Amino acid sequence: VNNPHPLQQHAGRWFTFKIAVVPTPRTSLIIPTRKFKYCKKTLRLGMENGEILDAQIPASSEYRSNHGADNARLNLERANHSHAWVPSHASGSWLQVDFELQATISEVLTQGRGDYPQWVKNYTLSYSSNGVDFHPYCQNGVVKVFQGNGDQNTIVDQDISPVIVARYIRILPRSWHGGNVALRVDFSGCLKADRQLLSSCKELLETNRSLTSGNYRLQNKDSHAKYDVYCHMTEISGCGKGGWTLVMKVNGIKKTFRNDSLYWNNKRTYKVKNGLNGLTDKQTKLASYWNTLFKKICLGMKVQRGTETDTKWVVIDHNASSLFDVIAEDNFTATHITKSKWKSLINDSTLQQNCNKQGFNIRGGEYNKKMYVRIGLVANNETDCNTCNSCIGFGISITGCGGHVKKKACGNVFLAKIERRNRKTTGFAFVLP
Image (cartoon, rainbow, N blue to C red):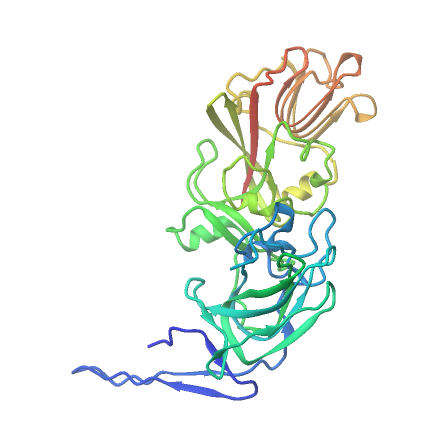
């Protein structure tokens, strides 16, 4: 019989729990023994250095989107963001950390808000093994109230003795300065031996065919970097069976992922939480962009016409160590699917007859500035590919007569026709090893 609650233990001591099970007839006596020991080496547990990902830090609420729990990292300073987690309601607020493995927690370190005079003056802790049933941390049978901060930036560390052994921990502010709770935090202790993570959604699905689409954690086989992704575990019409790893989602009318965006060339995520919500319209770029190798890429476009939406998909066979490695160096790489396949992404798309150059990083014209498409197909009515008057794809910039430049994050562009402005187009990119 397992002890249903996470365990508290005293530093430097061994605890042995023996649970006797009274046997029924013809049943052997079972006396399981569990031993826990304090950490041989105490380390920071990952809030400050980023080993704990944003998705592992939920909170009761956030004051605004740039005051979220992802700002609750010790010593964090981010431009255009609060330098701490700030909830929308201080009373009853909490910040939670999921260590994903059983952790021995021996110290908590807190800071206030670096960019505004707000901090937590005292707080309590609770912990859980399953993320549902939380237990208050007590000393001598009384809930322990920890002394917090007295200014914005001084780090206050508090020992936890007896230590906490649990997967989840919550900080619950009791009093605060400056009109609201503001908190940055890290913990010290040690983790149970790490479990082996897989490198793709396809591998996950092959190990367990009952897995459903959702949020999973992967690990790069070479760098061992861990990252959260959305896995589409069922078939995508036009692309094939499940096991697809989401890389990015782009909004055709927004500037974030236009062809000149630095996000195509860097290893920085964009709004990870949007990516973990699946096939919504909210833009994202996940760490799978530079971590996940693939043999197939599945591209989708969802077009909204009034209240109706239509999503189409195409699959491209291409071997690469990551989408970043294909795109970031700005070198052209050809793809080989039919023009009709490209056009099928949008039902009434229009492309001219000639050129029909397709692939990654398509460039042309004087100084390669007349056209630039990150992924897609370009067309014209000329006998060469030095100009582009129509195209379909992602990260589009084309220059027409008179120097008119049209940029779009994704969709179908035809300079000779009136743009259909009443449409919203969302693009998706998945990869499969």
